[in-house]
Length: 112
Length: 114
Image 1 (tube, rainbow over the protein chains, first blue to last red):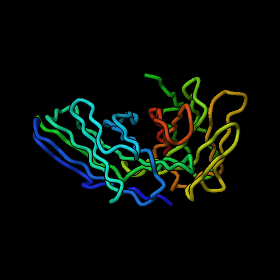
Image 2 (image 1 turned 60 degrees about the vertical axis):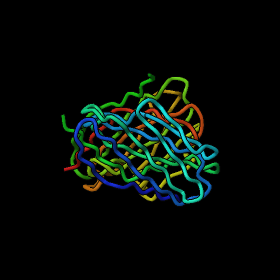
Image 3 (image 1 turned 90 degrees about the vertical axis):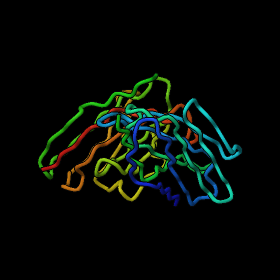
Image 4 (image 1 turned 120 degrees about the vertical axis):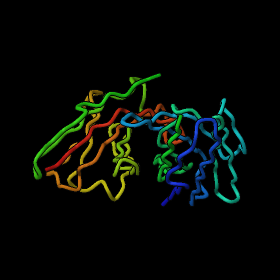
């Protein structure tokens, strides 16, 4: 079945820095890739998504890049703020299943 | 945005007892999911449910687990009997359509099996 890996598993940066979170998946049938953010002790919240017919999507300080050939995604967050501190999850779902598989998560800590 | 409610937020029970975790999904959503979060990070898929039926389940969805949504009320996850390794945070999620849609998550139920 689909496996989704994320690197790094954790990141500590100073406020204002940019960060890059990498995600790779194994199932070439995966077509939809939403990302979620989980602040400490809270629910997961959707932040950005991309479909397999796109290469790039931007939402304010978030830019998501997708490479279908290498089965790789990367989330770029610019001008980080302490409020960005959370666990970030990449996820994947395919055209032939209703299952949504989550990545291993990246814990981001932004210091003031 | 739309909210998924989970009740209770924390449940402590003795090993071997039965527990039911309740989820009130977004009102017009049709697909429902349970995930188990282990060690505060890894989100493991357990099961998804549509039109009164389990669509898919993972190896973590043991025989002691069951789900149902009787008459459009709560979407429940029942564990009977519980084991120590069932201790985790369980998240319910719902979506309007099948897997290729955004999931809306509840705040989770922390289950502690003693």
